[in-house]
Structure formats: C-alpha cells, structure tokens
Length: 254
Ligand SMILES: [Zn+2]
Image 1 (spheres, rainbow, N blue to C red):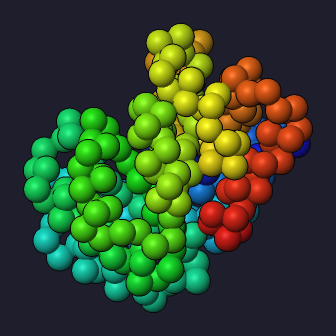
Image 2 (cartoon, protein in one colour; image 1 turned 90 degrees about the vertical axis):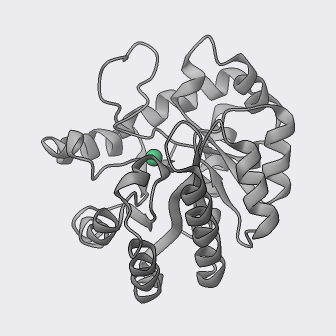
C-alpha cells in the first residue's frame, strides 16, 4: 500500500535534526509523498529548495493565519508574485484560512480572500486551516467562490459542515484527531461521507496521535491515521488506501 501525507511541515525546525531518517522511516512504511504547505513569506520562498533536496516532496505557498501578527502588509503581494513565477512547482495555495482563536480577524478575512483569488488565478486548489471558523470560511466562499477546490485541513465539525465543503469541491483532511476517544462527532463524519472526499494527513510535527502526546508528530504516522480510519469504514483497507492515494494525486495533480 502507498500513502501520501497530504499535510506535513517537514521543513519545520523540530524535524530538521533527523529529517533524513524521518523521511526514510516514512518511505519504509509506504509513505512516498509529502505535501508541504507554506506558512509565511520567507518560509514559502525556501520551500522550492527544500523540494529539490528531498524526494517525494510537493509544495504550496501561503500565509498561515496562526502567524497573522508576523505577516506585513507587502507580504501577500510578494507571495502572489512568487507564486506566479513558480506556478509549475506548486501543487496548492495555502496554508491559509481563518483561526478564530488568533488575533486580527478582519485582517485574516481579507488575507484569506486574497488567497482564494490567487488560487483561482493560478488554477490551484487551496489548503485551508480552520479553527472555530466554519462560518467565516463560508462567508469568504460566498464573496469569492473557490474554483479549484482544495482540502479542509484537519477537518473537525458536523456532517452538515462536511457536506457543505464537499459540495464546494473540497476534500476533508483526516488526521490524528481520530485517534482520540473524544473526537466522536468528527469520527462519525469520516465514517459517513463517501471515501473519495477524504485525504490522509499528519500535520507533523504538530498534532501527535493518541499514545504519542508530548512528542513531535512524524510523517510515518500517516499509516496509523489510516488504520484508525479503517476502523471507521466498511471498505477493505486496500481499497481505502488506494482511494486515498488516488484522491491526493488527483487534487494536487501529483
Ligand atoms: Zn499545517
């Protein structure tokens, strides 16, 4: 079985000391592709080199709402210019979105609009971060409908919210959240929606799985996320693995 970790921050400093080993270990359990989102202007601009140095890496550029206070007013224009110049090297625009637990909500909203416009202009999907913000994201979609779909990273929410995103052409990112007992609502969604709407991800080095709390998360654990998902689904594991792999390839044109 082959897997793609559709959302991991392999370039983050937490992973740098042993990165080659983490990638080798992931490859050894069948994880052959890694989608690495951009989070800031400077970091996005370094991802091209990162991709050239590490096999199986696919990259996106974006300004993450979590770092909203660090994004200066000229950063988005510079990011957009960079994205136009390197369009062929990008598989998505993001990580962008709205995090209602972070500051400067109005600025987050306008930045998110700009990311949607950029993705539309470049005919790319979006990698969307959400946190207590489904209604803000729906508002943004109403103003600027995304044309090339994308993924709702680390989806958590109701079936109604899931169906809304699916209707807009989005996949739902399935991550380590489902390893926890408390995630019943989200697990019920992943058990219910058609398999073709799901993608596997770890968000490494963040979001450790149950049993690994307090440790850095690793891309090899996308296989553990897969095993938890298999417990929720009626399809065979090999069919699930194949569909999830194909969905990542289709969405990101890998
Ligand atoms: Zn992320």
